[in-house]
Amino acid sequence: MDKVKKIITLLENGLHEEALQKYNEVLLSGTHEERFLLGEELMQFGFLEEAKVLFERLLESYPEEGELLVLLAETLIDLGQEEEAMLSLEKIKDQDGSFPQALLLLADLYQMEGLYEVSEKKLLQAKKILPKEPIIDFALGELFAEQGKFLEAIRAYELVLKQEEVIGGVNINQRLAESLSAGGAFEEALSYYEKALDDKLEIHTLFSYAFTALQAGYNRVAIEKFNELKDIDPEFHSLYINLAKAYEREEDVENAINTVKLGIKQDEFNKELYFYGGKLSLKKADEGMAVELLREALAIDPEYMEAAMLLNKIFLNQEKYDDIIEIVDMMNNLDAAEPQLLWDAAVSYQHLEEYSQALNKYQQAYTYFKQQPDFLADYGYFLMEEGKRKEAAEVFTELISMEPNNDEYQDVLQRLLDEN
Image 1: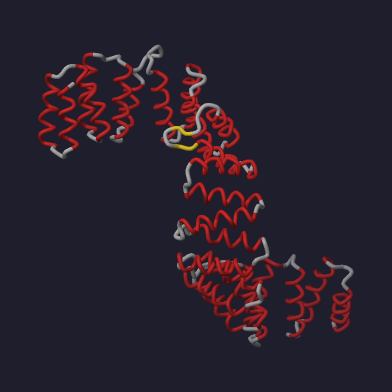
Image 2: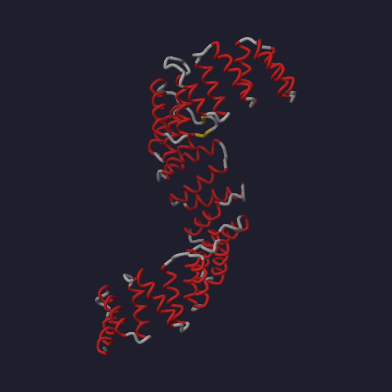
């Protein structure tokens, strides 16, 4: 085994040419054991092509040796040669001791290709052979979780936890918590997140814990954990909007707004933060700040319809009709379709005394809002003001069919009918 040790030492010292010379000696005249050991070592060092050649040479002498076929397949997978790996694995006989490992690798390959049913069959076949092997249950959990079959994933991970808490560097408590959370069992997920974090403080797990607490309605826990994450990694952008929501749910609007501002400093092109900041500002009756933040959101994404519509709502309240028309025109130029903009434009043109434009917008909006009493009232009164009594009477007739006990509409309709 001295030859193998010398090659590894040369590689560790960066003497690759000398190592390659020694490698060729083993390949051409080394013993089977030397080739086998060197192949395994070279895999670890990332010399995959060289390892592949060694395993292929060994298989010339032992063509049905399952362990060699598995090693060759693993090397081929690392080289991105999945089809060749499958061919190698399918040569392994059912009675071979390496057959369960081959099934696991095949299942992984089929899963990568999106062939989930085939992958599951391979894993269940392996489980029949080794019913208590946790790595098989873990693989099933991963497969089910990827498909969104969270109940099945939970059952698989629970079986793993009876024997192991960590497999291949993956924390099973974390995986179980994620599946429980994804399946809507938020409260149950929290205890597993705690166990995962007790084992290792990892920022993505901490975020998931905080987010799940928020979903479960444990706002104070969410606030505590999001702030802990912020202290560890202030550049974890996703935390800010969720922390702000937790504060808002606790009716702490001031801290919610401050959190949004901190988030904007970290992620200045996040339109959602500006939009949410705008909504929070309205809660504080600070329309000026709301307008500023919403305009920033639109500057980042000119087609951000939610921001445009909320701005229009503010401008309607402020009677800033020119600003509304500006936004409507911008959206029209971008071919951003939203029926509410037609209604906003109609009301704005009406107040700006551009009546032909207002009528045009009302007529277009009618197609979308003819079942909405508030719109019909706006439209009906506009038609009255424009002297279109017959059309107004038709609109108020529709209104009364929706609100038959509205005395005001009854009086207006009666007057219109009397005039006609």
